[in-house]
Length: 125
Image 1 (cartoon, rainbow, N blue to C red):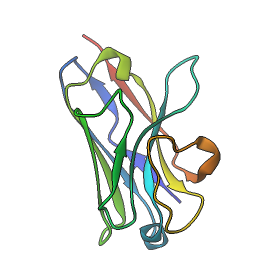
Image 2: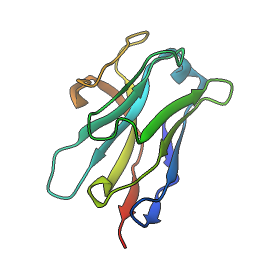
Image 3: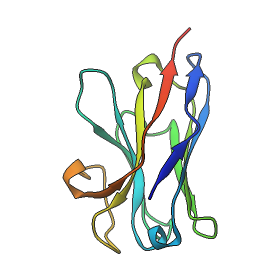
Image 4: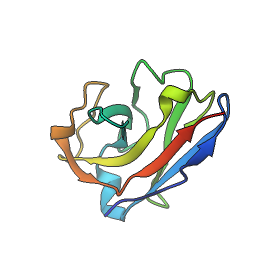
């Protein structure tokens, strides 16, 4: 079970950090974040391998967002800097469908095994 938190309202150029708390079982899986804006499909944002060594980002967030994980706490983080209005969406944490797989920026929603409940991020002046 995944539990996302940390969303909110922020001005353009601001920062937020999202947390995704999971069970220790999630330490064996790639985890990451997707987002869904109103009227749009859910899209990949970032992924991190179970060891934390391999990280992938969508082109739209690369250089602004940073994903990390703490397996001692079974938490995955998404640090979001230089936020833009187009980053406004519901953000969902995700766990891979398969153990020990490493995902890149083409990670599909069909290959997600578990979802968190979503947290709203609104970037507005």
